[in-house]
Structure formats: structure tokens, C-alpha cells
View 1 (cartoon, rainbow, N blue to C red):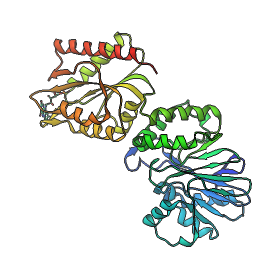
View 2 (view 1 turned 30 degrees about the vertical axis):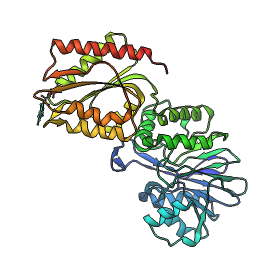
View 3 (view 1 turned 60 degrees about the vertical axis):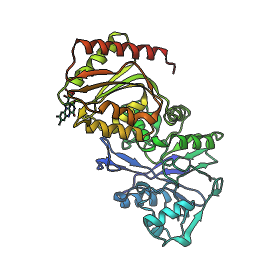
View 4 (view 1 turned 135 degrees about the vertical axis):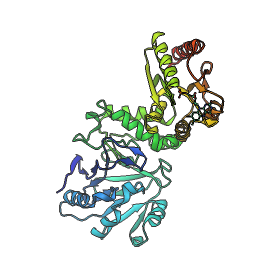
Length: 406
Ligand SMILES: Cc1cc2nc3c(=O)[nH]c(=O)nc-3n(C[C@H](O)[C@H](O)[C@H](O)COP(=O)(O)O)c2cc1C
């Protein structure tokens, strides 16, 4: 049985939900699944826009058939060759033998790397600015390399002013009935999941996202149709997500606030983190104060919070003369998302020595951060002297927050 939606005039959502997946890219835990979006443009010529993961072939083909309603398929447009979006292309090419495969030169190179060249004679290559007309609808192609793969392109449908945005503007979470962003974006954990998706998967490529934005800056965009999550079809939700993407892709904090990320084995560094958090609150900080045990959270969650807030306090501890492994792994992954230009502070715990503080700073060095306050140095457990240091750090962070404008 099919499950399709006509979301705009002649544009059908034919995507699927995946709630059985535990980890996206075998790495990012998904508590509420993910959707793979695909669209059918129904016109004098019919086009399929992108495809879905391998486990959903039967349901997906039934969706496309329902949208086509007995008509033939003329084009299959591939904005992105990542397997979660291209696993069913070959099934579609066989089922609709008159369809041309629309992509750029790199799309076809990747297609043949992942699969083979059996459809070579049906390639329809497009370049920057090329247009493809289906009747009332016309797609204009915009090359957006490294958002977040080299072959990625977007397309702009000129009659209804729709941006088919590939993975940009995507989010985790399966679609629960509401397919329009306006019905979900201010509810539940939607924003946290959209941020976690962007920061961890596309985040590193902020400059490329900005380059893509410049290319579409002059377009009147009335709707954005991404490859995961809800669609944006009203000015408020388009403005909201554009504003977030502008911040995320320029590595600008969304808001003032503090993430304290510590490591601990016996609880002393945790106590220091809690004393610091309490002192910040006592000093009148009204912004968010979030405290994370690095062993307790998946890195992708804390990484997204580091990008969200203006200030971060890192609490590394020593382990076999080096940096406690979960903190080492977390910091490496954080830097891998392009984390930069933040206001950061440190509290460190050691019993007989090691380079955990130095190593943490080395890992973070490329981000050109501003250091706030003096490092708090704890020798095994928090004593009166360290409480004084923690209070001084809290004061420095409070003054720093008060001096920032967003
Ligand atoms: C396997 C292991 C290795 C450790 N290696 C070091 C080390 O090289 N240098 C050090 O100063 N402390 C080392 N420690 C001790 C803890 O890092 C240290 O006591 C830490 O400051 C405790 O902080 P916590 O109470 O927050 O866990 C080690 C502890 C364990 C269990």
C-alpha cells in the first residue's frame, strides 16, 4: 500500500520513515528514527526527485506508482549520491525504462563507483544554471559541492519557487504525520535534532554552505524540500531555518549560554563542574547553563550544544599520563565539526601528573578560541583553594557573557 502526500501543486512526497535504524551512518543514535524524502513532480513530463534507503524498495516503488497514477516516468533527478538517497535508483531505472538519469558529471562518476555503468546511455548531464522543463514546472540546477559531498547539487523550481535542497535543511526524526515544518519546528526536540543533524553531518562545511547560500541569495524561495525531515513552505519557517543555518554555517553561537563538559572517574571533577555551575547561577547568569559528563552522552549531542552556546568549559582529567580517552575522542570529534571562535575555559584534575590539559588545548588550538578566566587546577579533590578558583572563573565567565551581543 502507498502513503503519499501532494504537498504543493503537482509535487508529491513519496518518501519513507525509518524507525528501525539505531544509528544514522552507523554512528549517530536515533531515538525517533529518520525519514528519507523523495518527490514526484507530476506534469506533461514526470520526474522523480532523489531516492531512499535500500530497506524500503517495495513501499517506495508503490508510492511512486501511486503518484504517477498510471503515467510513465521521464526523469530521475539525483541531487546527492549518498547511499541513503540513491539505493533505489537502479530499481527505478529498470521499472521505468524510458526515464533519463539526471545528474552532473560527478553524479555519474559516483554512480559508477557505487554501482555500474549499465544505464550509461540514459544519462542526462546538467551543469550550473542548466534548466530542465517538464511542462508547467522547470528545474534550474545549482551546483553546491561539499554540502556535504562533492557531487551535490540543488535545483530551483521556477514556477512555484521551490528549492530542492539535497541534505541541506534536513533533520533527524521520522515524520509523525506533520510534514510541514511550521507544525513541528517549535515543538518537542525538533530543533535539537535539526541542529544535531546539521552540525555533525554538514557542520565542517560551513564555508561551502555559505557559498551555496550566495548562489541562491537572489532567488525568491517559497518552499524548501530537503532529503530528510519536514518541508518548509511558509515564510516564517523558511526564515527561521535560514537564520539558524546562517549562524551554524558561520560558526556563530545561536545564543549566550554555557556548556560545561567534564570527564570524571571518581566524581571530583563532576563536583567541580557542579560548583562552577551553581556559582554561575548565584552570580545571576540567566542564560542556559548545561552540564555534561562526557562519558554519559553521545558526542553528537554535546557537540551540537557546544555549537549552540557562546561559552564552553572543558574539564579534562589525566589518564595514563595522557588525556582520559572519552574526552580525547570527544574533543577530536568536536574539532572535526569545525568548532571555532568560541569563548572557552578549563578546569583540570590530576593526581600525580600528565598532559591532559596541554593535550586538550592542542586539540582545540585550530579553532582560534578566546580563553576566558584562569584554568582551575584540582589536585585529586576540590579544596577551599579550588572553590576560590572556581568562583573566580565563574565571575570571569559572567563578565564575558555580559559583554557579548547577539
Ligand atoms: C587507570 C588510571 C590511570 C590514571 N592515570 C593518571 C595519570 O596519569 N595522572 C594522574 O594525575 N592521575 C591519573 N589517574 C587518576 C585520576 O586521573 C585522577 O585522580 C583524577 O584527577 C580523578 O578525578 P575524578 O575524581 O574526577 O575522577 C588515573 C586513574 C586511573 C583509574
